[in-house]
Image (cartoon, rainbow, N blue to C red; front, top):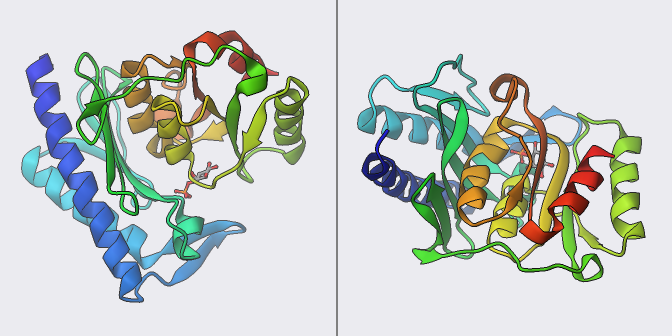
Length: 260
Ligand code: IPD
């Protein structure tokens, strides 16, 4: 796909993400975002389903027949063509509890790799976007990874879920803190990843995350000059992978934290 076509898709995705985040926020304002549970610590709200349906309908209008994988409605996807990858609300537990730390994430894979991202956070009116060869921006202004070189000044967010044994998470946190890094756990993997792309965090690491949480942020982070791991490899679309994004000078240290 030519760079101009990717740039046009990125602009459309950014508008859709912004609109979808507004829709989810309004549903919660209207009292419709009632939480149910998919499992322990795994929240689902009415807004998750409504937002994913909205995104699917709009993408189908813009790009008829293209494949879509979404957190709530799934999708059988494969091949080298464009694949849209949607997290209608990332940070659903935060959203369900009235917190503002959640976002809508649209990613697109091309040639089997993360190629485009558009991520909207309603509370701060922020839209992060990027695409391979097109740069990365926050509300239209170019973004860069943090220039941090000293681990004892680094702030690293660690993602946690029940998909990974607790002792593995503890071991990663132990390695980070023993090296002198400050740690955070914020409940939205996508925001942690994309805030690493803009340099508010020095890194986001999680031992397992799904494609819909990470595809968009990864495409943005690569264009922002971040160190990233090889998240979009192997069976990442179906099964997810470990993920790491961070300040380029800290890459070897961050890889060590992630890989043990
Ligand atoms: C979850 C959040 C969480 C991360 C999990 C994700 P969801 O996504 O991003 O921070 O640690 O791995 O599953 O359920 O809020 O869309």
